[in-house]
Length: 186
Length: 291
Image (tube, rainbow over the protein chains, first blue to last red):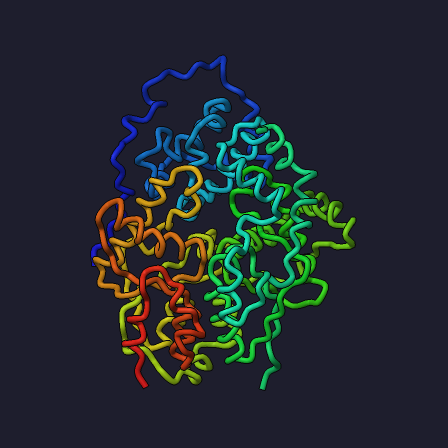
């Protein structure tokens, strides 16, 4: 069987990648950005990237990204902090880890995008729906709540989830960034 | 005769709320093989990759807390959800290797008298079945084997990757499906994401990803789909109804949770595995039971 991995067919295409057209303004680069990412969880291997773009070939939705995965990694190395942290792409990442799995240099690409999202969150740059999920966790202590308890009972299960403690989640997130984000969004 | 395997059962929030049929079928399968599953006390939800994206420390802490509670009784955790599995396994792996974060997290947990030490392992329910019971023993109890019907497996990203974290091989699930008498249908997009994670940010994109998968499975001759995750199940099952409406496309591919398939092959009734809760009508699987 011939194995083909087509990218997701979408109606809109993103056009040519932006970084290949616009010149980079050297004075706007943040040369510390690279070290910052490298100090974050699973960011150590960042500098090993040799821009082969295997990550982009592995990404099922790179065709709709204006900045491709390998370009985002290159942009981090160059210090284009503002562009990376404001990009929509880091939030569209499926977290499917296909880029990370295939990287020949063992750069933990998906993990690094998580680091970028955390830095963006520190600056308050989070899509409203994701803030909404944070609010849900902060207020309800879980993402999904049992509404149809009769369905559980019909199957011989306890109507409520046994052992669930919503307070542990609430108390933890009250002291961490989620609380700041949710409050800032209101 | 080895002793009965005992596990901390971590349900998370999605399975109990949206897929009680998964929960019920899993418990009955566990009972059949003398696996003791004990609901964990005092645990919250895993937070999902969304929490990991906005609040790394919060995500580490709540998952380390779950792991620390399990460490108290010394049994491994099993969970039926890829999202919970991915979170717990990633946090376990990360905190084992990062002393700084481990200290930071443990300073928070100390107030509850808890400490993450990394002495138990979080595992997916199907991996525990595969490793601790084994394909041979699983096969011995099957009374109504399937007739070789073609099932496409959607493993789910957070079950398979990153492999150095999840340590799960796709063959585990292939063997588990084949143990029921069904055939595994290979399809080109087997590794691809179902789109669930991107739902809150771009619903249209999420639907297109699900559609790609369904097309790939259908074109490869699958008659059913097997999943081991509520989020993936939702994407592939529920979205088929949406695709019918928005694209006029009908795939008619029933989506079953793995314990439902195994449960039926073990002689359980369709009521016991909650078959009526599957969105795309799945009762045609009953026609493929033999014995």
